[in-house]
Amino acid sequence: MRQLTSSPCVFTPVGTLLGLSLMVAPNAHAEFIADSKATLEARNFYFNRDFRQEGARDKAEEWAQGFLLRMESGYTTGTVGFGLDALGMAGFKLDSGGGTAGTNLLPPDLSGGSQDQYSELGLTAKVRISNSTLKLGTLQIKDPVVSSNDTRLLPATFRGGLLNVQEVDRLKLTAGQFTQINVVDSTDYQDFTANRIGGSSDRFQFAGGDYQFLPNLTAQYRYGQLENIYQQNYLGFVHTLDLGAGQSLKSDVRYSRSTEDGNFRDLDNQAFGALFTYSVAGHGLGLGYQRMSGDDPFPYIGRSDPYLVNFVQIGDFANVDERSWQARYDYNFTALGLPGLTFMTRYISGDNVQRTAPGEGKEWERNTDIAYVVQDGTFKGLGVKWRNASVRSNFGNDLDENRLIVSYTLGLW
Image (cartoon, rainbow, N blue to C red):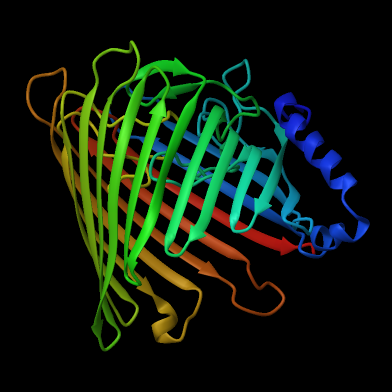
């Protein structure tokens, strides 16, 4: 078993934080303790991917159990408040037959299989002044230019700093710098790469803001830079129109412009996406369109999640010149007296892809999710989700995939 790991650079801000907190008056620790909370999440994850194209391996199939311990302190009292968070994660192999490893549930071993167990510990120091916070250490984030992947047994994390400022009404500012990434099937931090682009970098920086023009209209702008590889400008709008009688129309429009940074090779990509969702009485009907323009695919940090409307269970539909359409249907069974039960299905079709072989590249993906969360009683919060996907392509892999996830989160205090 790999030992618990944590970066030495994390302990520097943590040690500074603890030293400062010890210098304040004893009663300043009251909120630090009183506002603290801890949860233990258990994830049981079965993953099966069948490869359907000629000449491919048969399948990737594994079953594993994961545990995530999240501890968050409050802040010490005073003009400047200090706090400390911890994230402990452990994964255990339950089954991985001969030749079926490679699901990204577990770290690989030297024999081509998967490790039996692994674990890690991340610490985050935090400081609060008024309505603004600064966090240093182990970070998870969901943002238009950088997003942690959380689609396997344990989530990916970044190492670095994150600043959030909310001092002006309706305006949220954010900025950050990350130096490394720890991907979902590893306990080791590593430098960044760019998906489909390549290169290597030890610094990602970003900044921007969200402004709420109206209660139902929010605009977002971000600038992101993967040093010496790419820089990216993002602009997005989210609007919800109340149509009355329990009906609404949500519009989610996104645009990104990406170019090279430093001495990296020439890079040019424009990504446009829009998703419109009509909702009524538990039903949701969505229609989406996504278009890639320029000489390159959409760049983003490797093994992270791109912020694209057609980034789905397996594909991102972000190849050179690709255009793709999405049709999606959601249903919440609360409308039928079955709270906690939800259903989603969607179909995405992409074409106009540049490929090395003659002819136009085409692909499609179909997803179905069925999930249930127990609403009350002894097992309140117990969740079961089945995720199914099929992918067909004339330039990539043909896949059929199933994921079965059973999760339960226990509040410790």
